[in-house]
Length: 393
Image 1 (cartoon, helix red, strand yellow):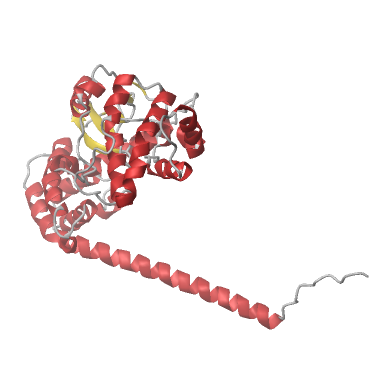
Image 2 (spheres, helix red, strand yellow; image 1 turned 45 degrees about the horizontal axis):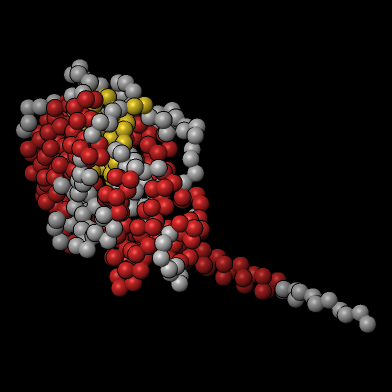
């Protein structure tokens, strides 16, 4: 006996129109929510800029009284911003003024001071150090920084601490080398030091001291061969807030390091031809397979789940560096695990030595470096939330 097919119920025109009205209402409400969030953000920004105004007015007075001009005035501006931003960054939340709030207030104060020569001179210096999304606030269109030669980089023995140097011309004549000291051991690559040096040799020597003689001794400059990794390392211009813990010296170059990084980002790309497969490409299952073949001791009951948690805890915002295992990276991950998993952290930390051994085996990390990394497993028993601290390995 034939069985009749179930048929879809036809919808009346009234039902269709009702659904359309409901969909339209949802869209309107979503749009209203977006506008409300945007308005709230803009209001918050305006309030912070208002809090910054007294400090900006005082800073504007100091800078307009300076006899300096051009590059020298840009340097003085950065040097004055550093300690002021460090002080403002330590204020309670209700009094917090961020780096971009202060420079916005400074631009406003200089414009309101009048169209005199000192104000124009300082506005030009301010515009010259600001990343592109902030320049409009000054009303000035500064000439772009002029790259005067080849960009160079190097990395430490662990592969996760980088120096990037680029030569920039100055109106006064001499070329100055700008250094980005980038530590990629935490959850994201961080510029822990930046500044101008008279030569590439001087910049390299300064970076080697900051990174530590054991990790960075004997390194030398070479050509950039991977624009994708370079972009992952350099500070992004759209970053609009400090992470907290920056020193006065780090705040000194907060804006200028982003402005000059834009120049490097705009260079013709250099593609790495031989891109090795990383553990990030393989996923946690590959570690589980390795563990069952190589690791000693009883297998944890929930090895797959632990491997997945370890995989998620390991820094991945610079994918090409996922396999690196520096002592600082191991300590940072240990701290993150303790902070996130709390009473359940011990089981995951117990797996960390095997994880380090697996990655070290993949990359051929020398035994002496592997042992230094393993010595820091679980080492972050005292919480250190200062991601911006300079670490010498």
